[in-house]
Every structure is written in C-alpha cells, then in structure tokens.
Length: 147
Image (tube, rainbow, N blue to C red; front, side):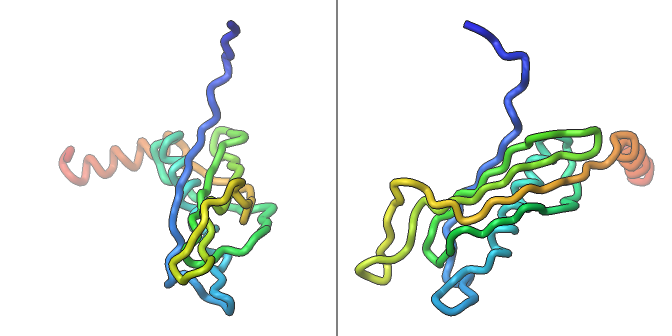
C-alpha cells in the first residue's frame, strides 16, 4: 500500500431545493444568479475552512450555464480548491440537477439516473494577510477590554 504525501483537496458541497419564489422567467425558469449565489456560499465556506476568514470573492471565470433550472428541482453544488497561493484560493465549481421537477401532476418529480450539469465556473477568492487579521484582532481586544 502506498501513502500519498499530498493532502486531500479542500471541498464543500450544498444540496438545495429550488422554490417557486425563485422562478423569474417565462416557463418557470430560475435565473443563473441563483446558482452563482450557491457558488458564493461554497467559496465562503472554503475560505473559512482553510483560513478562518470569509475572504473576498474577487472573480468568477469560465461561467457556463448548460441546462435550465426550475422550481422543485434539487441542485447539488460543489466546490474544490484546485490551487492556493499565500493570499488567493482558486476554486473549481459545479452545480448539477439531481432531482427534476415535473411529470404527470403538478407535484411530480423524478430522481435523475445521471445528474445533469447545470453550471460550471471557476472562482478566485482573496484572504487577508495573517498579520493584518492578527493586528485587527488585537485592536478589537484592546477596545473591548480583552473580551
């Protein structure tokens, strides 16, 4: 048995049901911004896990919307850090539909045998310099009397 010396990549996943209130277009389509908000939450979780700070999402790149999203669909969004520098995390993002709304009745839905990719993207997040965070924490501690 061989042991890898490389750490497992940092990942995060969300699964959500899309509500009726999320439909904005004819045909009950959900706007792409809804998926991008899920991606933003995932990037925030990544930076909290890796750096103890929410960081600042500075860029999306290569955004591709590949399938429609409707109310009642279940979307699973995932993020994976693909590269890190001292102050930046580069994150690969993917959202797939795992349950699709619709069918013979208004409340019908079906589990998809193969998840359908609805969006992919890459994101860059910036984390604060550790010394800046430590200085801010010390300042707050001084102002609050150490509380």
